[in-house]
Length: 59
Image (cartoon, rainbow, N blue to C red; front, side, top):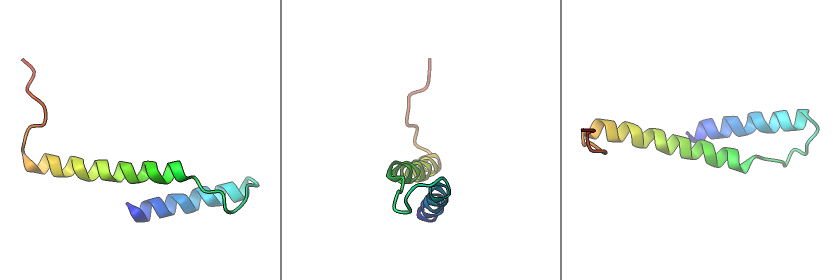
């Protein structure tokens, strides 16, 4: 996920420069969001492979 975050950051930075913004302008919320998405994906995979139910069955 760090690599994905880095690549997305570079892409957003390149688009910002092409649109006329300063090269130092970076989207920190985007980086944080991608990092949290990666953590959520790992947690989902780990919870599915554990086989432990995380919510009670509906009656």
